[in-house]
Image (cartoon, rainbow, N blue to C red):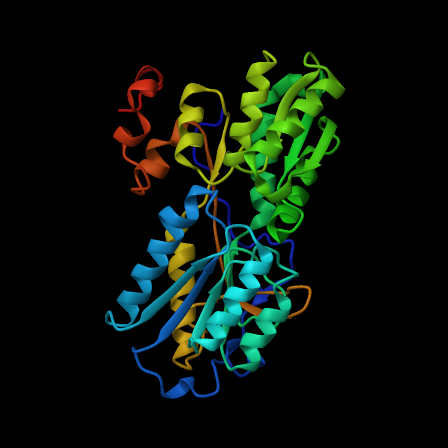
Amino acid sequence: MRRTAIAVAAGALAVSLAACGSAAESGDNSSGSGDSAAKGDDIKVGLLLPENQTARYEKFDKPLIEKKIKELTNNKAEVVYANAKQDASQQNQQVDTMVTNKVDVLILDAVDAKAIAGSVKKAKDAGIPVVAYDRLAEGPIDAYTSFDNVTVGKTQGEALLEALGDKAEDGQIVMMNGSSTDPNAALFKEGAHSVLDGKVKVGREYDTKEWKPENANANMEGAISAIGKDKIVGVYSANDGMAGGIITALKAAGIDVPVTGQDAELAGVQRIVTGEQYMSVYKPYAPEAEAAAEMAVALAQGKSLDSVAKDSVDSPTTKGVPSVLVPVVSLTQENINDTVIKDGVYTVEEICTAKYKAACDKIGLE
């Protein structure tokens, strides 16, 4: 069992990574809109998030970004918010609306990284810099903040192998990857395969449409039928929402095997407490959200990103994007107190409701 939190250095990127140069060296990527140099604290920031199925966006990302922007602008900035609800076409329209409303900068978490590229160019052509948030959108983005997503997958794969132990040689696992439209999902998958390949047999593997738990549930039911319930020894799930759907299918079939996750959603943490889910990847949202806010305000005000963005990343369409990459932690029963509780993400009372009280007591969570 893993006994300590594993903090992962953000330098192990699979995408091209190099020290971020000066604003002049970075060209257009670190410059704001044409007339933004005269801007003070009275700025308008557009915030576009991809969906509301995953609890993190409305509960953590949105309020954290808004709070930091207000702090950085003496409470004078206006944040204009829209959620695409997993609809790429709707998000393109939302970008158009932000351009029409003449926001000074845009923070964008893309539903579909490729489909959004044209809208990013529209914003850029209108003199509106774009900060890609959490997912590396294509098009002429000016800045990017996320986690080291290949290492997220490695962390999940390593935890699954640890949970399996000798059983890794005895059966097969199912890999439930995220949506094929999300570039992060491909990076999670890459990291997981780099750890799992050659150590355990992958019986079935899926790219789960729209990250939806119900789609993961259906995929898992199909995998159980195809492989046989006695041959499945574990499941790689790319996030907690899908893990919930997977575990429902496993329970219905009478299968109890380790399942991974990501995002440290409350339901996921509670499943870890009970032992239904083995681990989740805890991604501290505050540093990511604050970095996005800092870069957005700097770009809107025509300032350099040098003091904020210490790395750079290459997207398929843009090279040398100034970036902030945040470390991640493998969350298991052993470090709930030292992670999500210590950081104020959840209280013990929120986790240990009546349904989970006995399980919390058993692992010393009080």
